[in-house]
Length: 113
Image 1 (tube, rainbow, N blue to C red):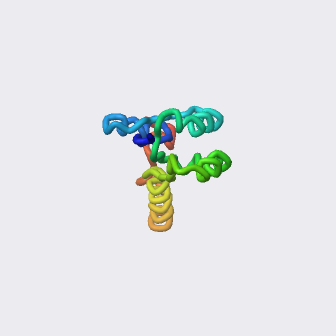
Image 2: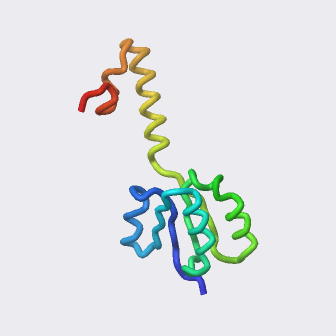
């Protein structure tokens, strides 16, 4: 019987889920992620969340899983893409308004700490 939840993604994004009883996987390579996905049956995983960056590279493995009842595989995204987008938008607005993006540079972007 499958009765567990898992999440596959970057270590800094998924480590907190371990405290909630979620099985956490942080593959270093796509090949490692493929092996994890193939082994979900052995782990008794019913529901697996996969970071959006791995959805396309794991397409074949996900298509094989769809033929089974379990696990259900769902993609998720994180806050970083929207944060980067908003940062770029703020830079563009600052450049238009002041001619410089020095007010919205992240620490270290200009070589300083």
